[in-house]
Image 1 (cartoon, rainbow, N blue to C red):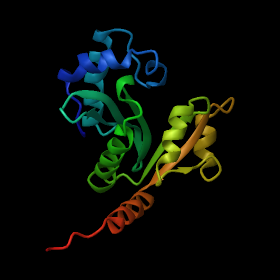
Image 2: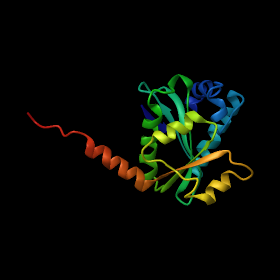
Image 3: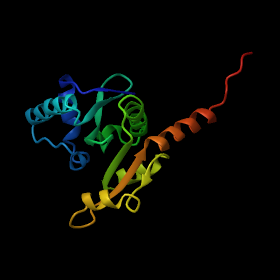
Image 4: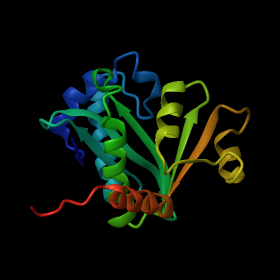
Length: 184
């Protein structure tokens, strides 16, 4: 499994995965036709060139596109995470591997300091996935300014946050918990 920069050649497969009723309601950049998805992807690639978004395609072990992972609204070394996977790939561990790869790129190559996730309170699957990640913290109380910015009229979203320091500590712990290989 790996992530790569967005490419128009992946659009057909991604569109087919995105329109599944189990996926579509939770996608930020919705498209109601293949042509619209192609147009949105072109816009995404251009927005990344301008520094407004960071977007990657998630690929399976064989290089097939299976979803996307994005940092939207990039501003002051922070942005909002948006991820979706095609339904056949739910529950198979791709989510965490994609996030780890994306956060490595964001924090260590692209100078991002904070990643926020706004997750609908009714989206149990996404909330559970976020809460499984050891470097994620619920930020409804600690970042009230952003929490109320995303919930203007009523509480629709929970706010989660990933800080570069939390992710770095997680990686350090992962590396130090791996058993050392010894020569025979």
